Length: 105
Image (cartoon, rainbow, N blue to C red):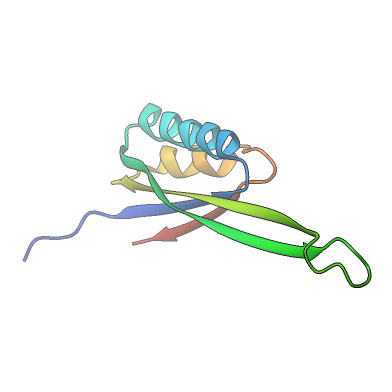
């Protein structure tokens, strides 16, 4: 039976798509620079939350405002990470507003 390669799975979440793309690019460059293979960033479906609020405090039911929050997500796999890769990723300073989840397989 073949031994599976160790992988690091990184999930990014942010409200701003430019911020998440920039952070994903930094992670990919860091991983490649330290000698690991990278799959991704893979764009996952964007979650859209919509809120409808009554504008009028009384009566006028037709007057409403609608707001939307979009949560953008990206997925990356780093295959066969070296010790240098893990150290570089730990020291990496990503932008505020980007949520990072890391899993080791």
